[in-house]
Length: 166
Image (cartoon, rainbow, N blue to C red; front, side, top):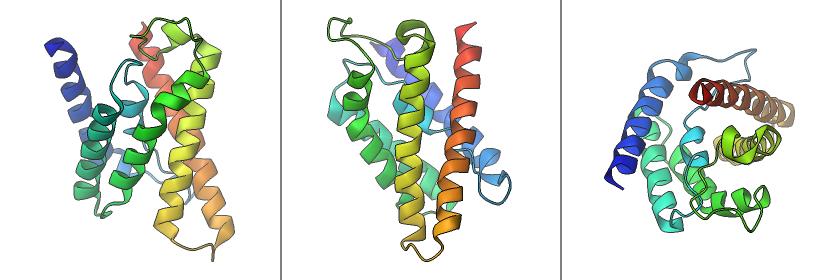
């Protein structure tokens, strides 16, 4: 159990550093920002407690908020995603699957993992950019931000997952 906690802390630190030092400075086509730190909540085990996932998600979101100058935006959205993650994961796994399932391409299969990742990232981006805009005044830009960031983040997560697979 302590090895798993150390792995989570290491992943937490790596994702924070990569997001804050590199990915926050990338904005493709004035609408797509990679939000790789969502990967942390997606990789939580099936048997993890909901409050534990929410605590980890809130801590990661708060850390990103502190270094990105987005007060409460990432923390609130990560907490919501962490709350919904067990339900979203159960949509793509069978009931008779092992309780300590670790979401990955190896364990879930490529197709299911891609759908799971895309749905979670789309949900995250929708809530994140809705809270950021806090209005639907510029609807086209809002939709472009959601779609662009969802695609970019999903592709980045799948690349990282492929690297972990080998």
